[in-house]
Image 1 (cartoon, rainbow, N blue to C red):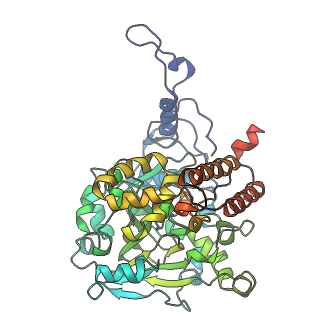
Image 2: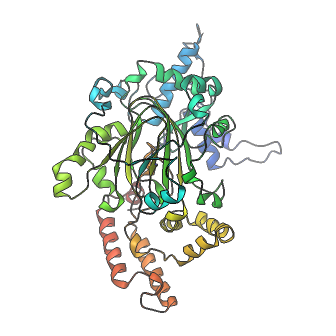
Image 3: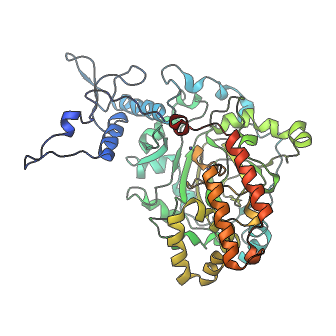
Length: 503
């Protein structure tokens, strides 16, 4: 349904030194260590993949050693101590700005405020339909084409996941498998064994965390240890058509996630990338949703403004920003719509069409599976977004569509670089559905070089098509207006670290 500083290398942390990098091989010739090898070694050393000495970020014994104490009187850590150590390491990696030992994971005290997880006064603004009563054709006409969200019931009957996806049964089957619980400052996945996660969510001390760790794993279907989960659910009938599959499993963006989270975990407000729509099937627990329509002119600065203490976490957004979107200034002064509220219950599937801003907060312990899809009804916009955001993948996708779906290939060929109706579209090459990761947020194209290149390309396209506005190509006035808007955005946007260094 939805974005770094490198820690200095410590000696003895498993990172090759300069001398080691120039070590000789068996033939006596120097062996060059590639940059990616050094990066991988540095990452392994940093996050417990190799044995390490010294201190970690909070002054505790670092690395993966199971011993503590000095050279004399070394003691092997108990299983519980090892588990706690892994959890602390995961916390430091996923949110390096917070001190674990300093109690900053609980600084807001959200666990002690019953209003944080209260659904009192929330509307029920999303239409509910039964999969038994609504056909695929009716769903397309009522919800896909007009881009309307809905909650689907009676579509998960017979799923093994309803019986097997409990915390205890998942621990019994996948206890030693590592699931992703976040990303570090360098973008690497941070993983924990399910045994450790099971302890985490059942420990009263950890469950006082403001925004707890939770599983959001997009690789579960690719890893041997977790692939059996794919057999426990079935893609609902409305979403069997998956056009990105023609791009190839290895080339397509991430598209399916298992999501397991305790209370107060969730996804801050975001739009799913590449104009994908999403469905989220809730096995157990309750999820609170807030959705904002795509035609309201909302942007990231509107929904995630600076200066109000947002930290990228869902619970903080719901506490600090969500109330503002229900106030008079939001609706009467700015003219934005109020959020559409919904509490999703077990056995229900939330459908979020492309372009909708949405945020999710887990109200209790939840288990869910979610996927992003592109269907025929929403293909034109998805093609435009993918062509700009993932040009190499889009070329492969188009080649396959020419054979599998020549009708859609013709639609793609007829699409201009940026159609008039897509002038305000934004793109992101990363995928995340209902994710807490900030990479799911989309950013505008503000590079002046892109503006100039885009305008030149559109002019050439018009010339080849024979002048005027043939073929739906954007007119000169629209092009100039788009260029002016982008230039203004580029001037108002704060410079990135790379651009600052360049100056």
